[in-house]
Image (cartoon, rainbow, N blue to C red; front, side, top):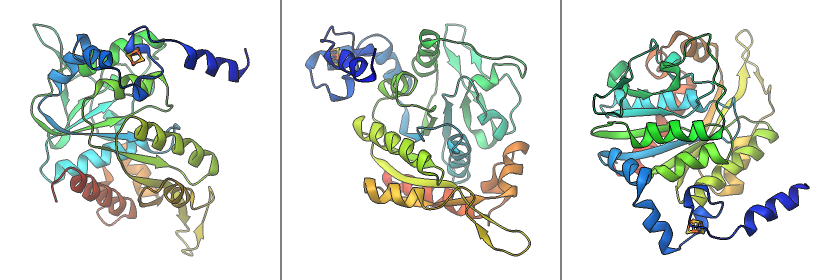
Length: 304
Ligand code: SF4
């Protein structure tokens, strides 16, 4: 079937009140949708996150642009400011946040009456991640429904308690895996979009901006990651992956550019060592950009 026909098939599907699978969900104002949100796992998710003040999405559209690095260090920088933070790692297949926080496997617990309790990492950061469940030699081969079940478990059956922030690391793409998460999280405060400088990444990051806007989540800003490399010997700037993708996207979408994170050996080493660079390398340009993102998040959430 040609691509155009597939798209038409989806759009032409009528309303059957199965809102959880509906392609028109974000554009729909039908009263039935509001009724649907008050039932089942949607109502449970609202209850389970009722005491989380602000929910922030970390998006990128594409894999490998630094979303998990950003989510980890944004959460850590918020915790350094005394905020109570939870990270929800929605990368089921390749979860890296526990590694970047220096956490061992385990830690997430099951309550006697059912449901989960998040693991607790450094600075009291709560972490929900498959990386704490999967062994190093295990691979996940889940299809759509199993991922949806896990998403519902993480969002609707977890005891988060009172938190200032939920930082959600959203997987690549703008379809089911992303939409399932966004639909279940009530009242999100904003999103931060990561891209690398290449035109390909910029095109995909634009879709991340669009899905955020479609879901009524204001885009707080864009971060261009791996933007350039400074030669450690002569100081010359080398644009390994071109330059300016973040700036260009920011201009096109009328969204602030938070900053550009250059390639840095210190950043790479800190991620592998599980020592967030925002604490270990306070003067690194990456830390400056992440702290600027945190300033903007705090402002968007009414803390400044
Ligand atoms: S989101 Fe709207 S159009 Fe879609 S199934 Fe629900 S009520 Fe119908």
